[in-house]
Amino acid sequence: MVIYTVKININESIHDEWLNWMISEHIPEVMNTGCFSAYGIFKLLLPETHSGITYVIQYECRSSEDYLKYREKFASTLQAKHSEKFDGKFTAERSLMEKLG
Image 1 (cartoon, rainbow, N blue to C red):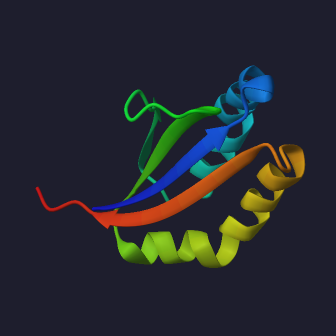
Image 2: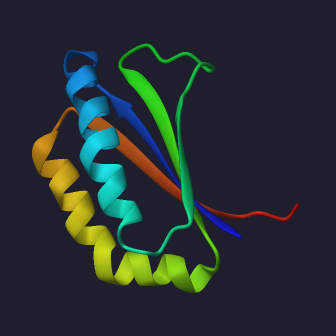
């Protein structure tokens, strides 16, 4: 199993709007690509950040091929929608991990 992780620090001033949009629109759009089998959204408690609120969203893929399909066919469009809506009010880091156990 492959885990695609997105760590996002969002400005507190738009936190509620962002979280609602993520849960009601963005994550369902990502899941509707068919590339992921499950997801989890987590609020980071430690380490504490000095500005903003940090979340980690993890999407599970059955294989690296599913992730590559997402990246090649869907990622740029979905990331652009997020960037346009919340431009300058977040930072994001993305990583890919393989589950071993």
